[in-house]
Each structure stands twice: as C-alpha cells, then as structure tokens.
Image (cartoon, rainbow, N blue to C red; front, side):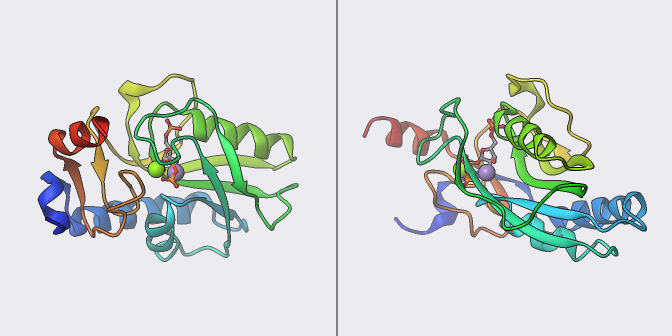
Length: 186
Ligand code: PRP
Ligand code: MN
Ligand code: MG
C-alpha cells in the first residue's frame, strides 16, 4: 500500500506542535540576533521545511544559503563520514552564521559543518535544530537552540526521510519497526 500514513506507528509532533516550536525559537533568535545580519545556512535536504518556517518567525535582517551535506545517503544508518554534495554560494568570513538542521543524531554532520565554517573565518557559528537526539551522540558538539528532545526512534516527516521518502509529511511520526525490517532484508 502506497498510503504514506500506513508506515507511521504513531505521530510524535503534529503540525501545530511544530508551528509552536518554530514560533518559540524564532522569538528567541530574533532577540539574540537583533542588530546582526546573520547568514542562515540550511543543511539539505532535511532542513528545508524547518528553515522556511523558522526564518519567517525571525524578525531580523537575515540571509539564506544552503549546503548539501550527507552522512546517511540512502541508508538508515550513519556512514560515519560526512560529504559535501554541494557547497555554499556565500563567503562566511566575518559573518554570524546560524546552521539550521532538522535533527542532530550522532552529531557528525553538525560538528563537520561547524568546524568547516569556523575554519572559513565565520565570526560566530551557532545552530538551531528542531529535534535533538542527544542519547545517540558520538561526538561532542554544542546545540545552542533546539525545539525538542527525541528518543532513539526512527522519525520521519517535515523534512526527515527514510531512504529519501516521506519528507513531505506535515507532521513528524515514528516509523513502524516492520518498515525498517523490510528494508533491512532487501
Ligand atoms: C540527516 C539529518 C541530519 C543528519 C543528522 O541528514 O538531516 O543532517 O542526518 O545525523 P548525524 O547527527 O548522525 O550526522 P542526511 O545525511 O540523512 O541527509 P538529508 O538531510 O539529505 O536527509
Ligand atoms: Mn540532513
Ligand atoms: Mg537523511
């Protein structure tokens, strides 16, 4: 069956929950970046929906750019190696950079991006993440802003994918374990 709701075990965050998180984070970022011109960097592809909702809750003069980084590829386990698929168009030197991510899991992707942008001479590098899967961390990386903690379950929707599908769900749901098992046996 191709109905995408059928692969969801239960909803974790509704559209409204997500909206509330964006409003709250947007308010905080508006205060913290007042008078600055931050460069908001979305990590493709997972961050697309969160970034577009978040920046519209931020009343600051910000610029947007994207970087396509991948540690998972089509897989559902981190490869442990982060690759740049496509780089920024903007020079980050002396800029206040805010990385936007859908989720921090092992922390590898975020740490890689933070280190890289720091090396390129950014004035400040912080991040705003929707979901913080802190229990799964493999590297130590500071998460300055986040919407909510999540446990060690496979979440999809609102940008988060399973083998590149289900990003377009309006809510965030936990994937049925059998969906992962089926994919594992392929
Ligand atoms: C996912 C997610 C984060 C990263 C988190 O991206 O969007 O960017 O993994 O995992 P980590 O903390 O273990 O590095 P993915 O590599 O799947 O690419 P995508 O955003 O295109 O789905
Ligand atoms: Mn990602
Ligand atoms: Mg992914």
